[in-house]
Amino acid sequence: MTSDAPSVTGVTPSVSAPTLPSARPRPVLSSRVGPVISQILLSLVALLFLVPIIWMVLSALKPSAEAFTVPPTLFGSAILFRNFAEAWNYLPFGRFILNTIWVAGVGTLITLVASVTAGYAFARLNFKFQGGLFILYLSTLIVPQEVIVIPMFLVMQQLGWVNSYKALILPWAFTAFGTFLLRQSFITIPKELEEAAKIDGCGHLRILRNVIIPVATPAIAVLAVFTFITYWNSFLWPLIIVNDTIKMTVPLGLQLFLGQQAQRWELLMAAATISMVPTVILVLALQKYLIKGIALSGLGGR
Figure 1 (cartoon, rainbow, N blue to C red):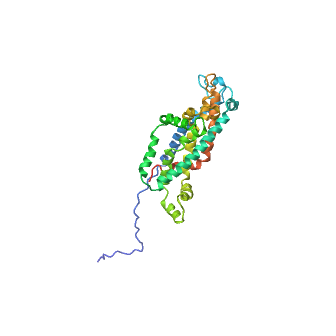
Figure 2: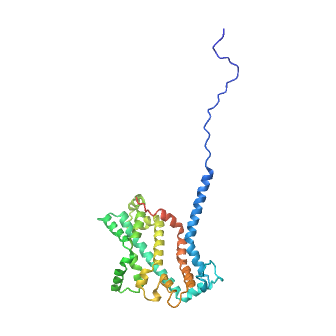
Figure 3: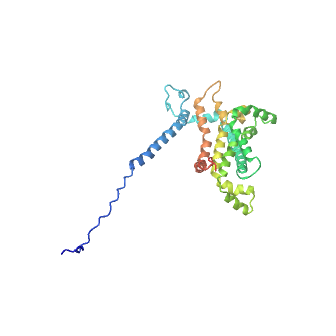
């Protein structure tokens, strides 16, 4: 008679574990190729923008007769570093540099003060017609500079500011762009910081100085660089308002190398290379703020 109970043989039957699906191999090749292609494209774009600057520097080192050779060549028959010294002494170019540094520096300082205070008012203060005034103020960006230069010249003439540094600086120091940029940055700052400062007894000016400005330093640095470069490269307004060589800025000084009697292209290129140095120094000095400032300038708003 057989029993239905299982016989014990002393050996435990093995139970096979369920097989898990094998993980798919990660696309290593595609993850490496993507950044390489991006780097190559960025390098090509950067080289495209650098080609005119490279050509300018190399043309500044050529002899006068080889500035426009056919076919064009990168290097001349001789490398003449004395072209830079000759360009500096050909005209009072040192005076042009000092004039532009003064105009751009003072203009940037006034622009920062006006933009910081106006941006704080539009971002943090509550007053009547705030939104309408901001839109009206912002709408001035629509008007091109070329449209208002003649009325602005008449105003400067009535004030007796023609051919003066005040006329070069003040008319363009109160722009809506800086106010808009800093307002968008200020509204992204947590209001809890401002409320904590008010509990400690701080007024608006102290809050602006001790709370808002330190947090918004990157955005202010971006505005400073943009404003300085705008003043530095301004040509149309100085051409209209200044008629004395001693008060000319760098763009006006550069066009003097192309006179009716002679056109010194190699000296023009050398002078243009020299004129880039202050702006390059400024960008290098503030480079740690620029990327962060552009990213956090608040252009998206809140």
